[in-house]
Length: 368
Image (cartoon, rainbow, N blue to C red; front, top):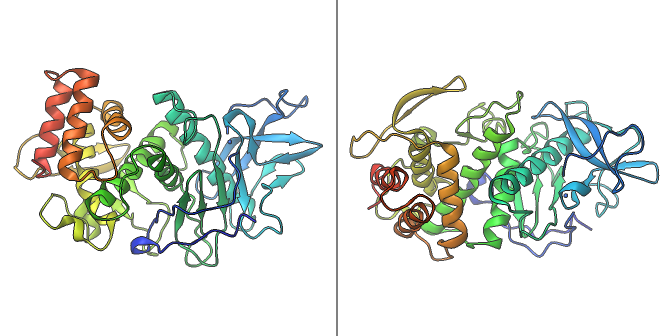
């Protein structure tokens, strides 16, 4: 059964990474065909989804033997399951291909969030980097929703993730950036295998925040306005505030804006992620005050310097190349600086503006 996951301790009560021996599917999410007329030869059809966080969206499903399934043949068989289903080896099913009602009154609503978000994450890595799935093997991951009882956390395994319904059971941890965050944890395990604690743990969590943010911007969902706020729709603390802030991490009261010795000894790698999150924001957007999509930011530099960003796309390409060619299980912040500079040199040249901006952004978060 899919519900028999080996639970790991959740770091800091936010998004935890679980690398567990999970019995599960490697099944996927895509364009498909309209359900009218029987769909495509692979059974893929377009369904109408109503998610808690993503609102009204189109989702790719599969029609088999007169029943619609939350399986996407066009994205490697990506599938979405109910943890408390009698047989959760099987994905959600439906009779009319209209899924959820946008509230927690329907167990399908959170499933729509996860299915849609995982598909958008698949699309981002495929369209941007040519990567087809977590392991680049064409197989889609398995998502599980309604995990546990009153769980305000999400967990990843080697090729999938599980999401709770929040402390009150009414706020599922299935927001777009959350799902992409967990998907990226699995991708890290397939590539760099960054550590889960210490400075490497911070870089690991930042990697998931970075690509969770990139998926949010790329998806452009009206119900989830793209921003540099992490987990702003999850409402984990019950105060409506984001879990983390990339432009100025210290706004959460715990994450440092700048590197200092002993950073790796923080009891929560999500907080140690602040320095890398801040670096990425500065690299992409630059320092100082600005408004993006209606959200105001004011990102400071450690040395008081002015950093001019190179844009999200270039910043993400540099980070992805570093992740897949330079970072390892022993990478710390000094190694992340070196790795991203090597990535920038390979992509844009050592004399490029992009390379120089990587240097400036690291200096601006006190990583020399």
